[in-house]
Image 1 (cartoon, rainbow, N blue to C red):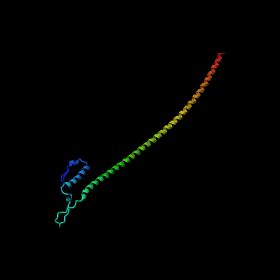
Image 2 (cartoon, one colour):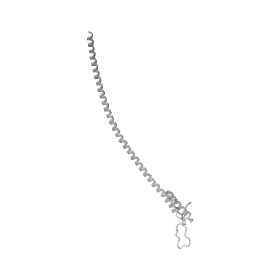
Image 3 (cartoon, helix red, strand yellow):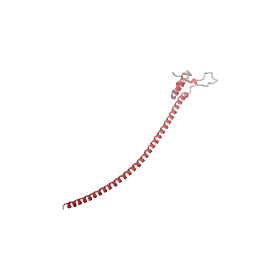
Image 4 (cartoon, rainbow, N blue to C red):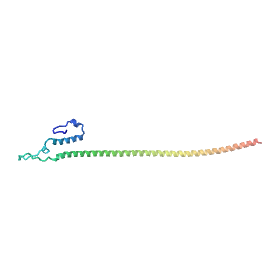
Length: 174
């Protein structure tokens, strides 16, 4: 039921309603007050009368700026709220974009540093492997030389043993 002129809305009904709803209720109340008062809107405003005239005060049309003013005020308030919200969202978006870019740069820097350290470690490992391969080749060459020397020594010893065996066989056969 819409409030009538002179009726008050209790605080308990507006306490838990959102601000937007309260504003809309107040606007509706002011509309109902002027309509439900029983007097035409034009007679609500003071109209000066001519002191020499015996007639009743002339009813001048009510300024429409009151109704337009209220609606205009609401429109301006809504528009200003939209602008504030838009500015706030823009600020949040700008902040978010800056944080994303900052995080990307920090991650790129971290990965670049990690890659540089990995490349450095890889180069050290490759250098160590090359060194080990050279050492392996040197050891294999030394082993080959040693095996060749042992083979020559074995053949020389085998010839000596054969010569001794032949000499003894000749001595026994005499």
